[in-house]
Length: 293
Image 1 (cartoon, rainbow, N blue to C red):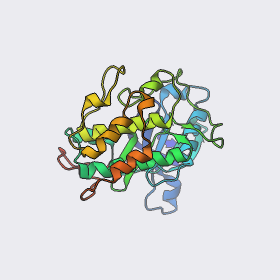
Image 2 (cartoon, rainbow, N blue to C red):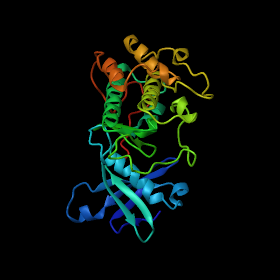
Image 3 (cartoon, rainbow, N blue to C red):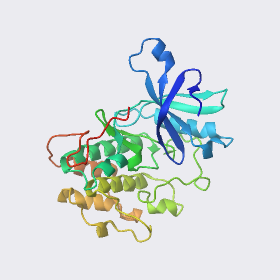
Image 4 (cartoon, rainbow, N blue to C red):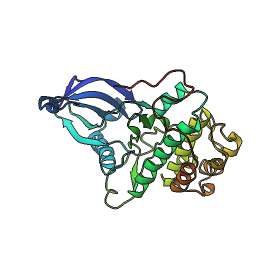
């Protein structure tokens, strides 16, 4: 990785890496030169595997374009897409948030989050997902590693496996499943692995599994994807009883049995009265979350 991209972005360190991309913290030297008090951005490039493809720039631009059309306080904000001609490297920049991803939070809180802290996260995630669906965008990879929480609230990010459902965005290229499979087995809807198309129901299933993990302190499913049954998991101890039937339905392995929508699940979870909302220092954790920047 070069230390400077497009003559403008000074790479400082890596923030995270997945099967499809790598995210770095960088300084925007142009904004810094004009006296911008906070010139730091997050900068995403494709992983080495995908960057070798002839259409790598196009694939990354598709992810950027999908995210750019989403303007919601719970969805990551992207700034610009650029190509460094010297290094022949495409990248895009986005807001840099202090906080931690939900997978890091789960490691800090192996017993699960108390309801007063879980509820605002659940509502924020379902708000973000409901909005993206209304805008004709399917996320495709909802999992704890793709949700950030911190003092500024929650952000859903990484639309690399996303798809558009509206004509205005339908022309964007999408990653072929046969070419690259980056789904996380514990959160992917079983029908996707059987070749079914991505759907709002599959996004709902993944989000419900994330919420179960936050409430129980562990993933609902491990190992085989066959004959998954949310009822076999049992209601998480941190989850109010009135929420379990809706969450259990959203986690149904058979999509025909997911007779609940993202908005309906959000209404059930949001309707439970709770105490003080705390985003950044979960109760009962081994240590407080540290900002990543």
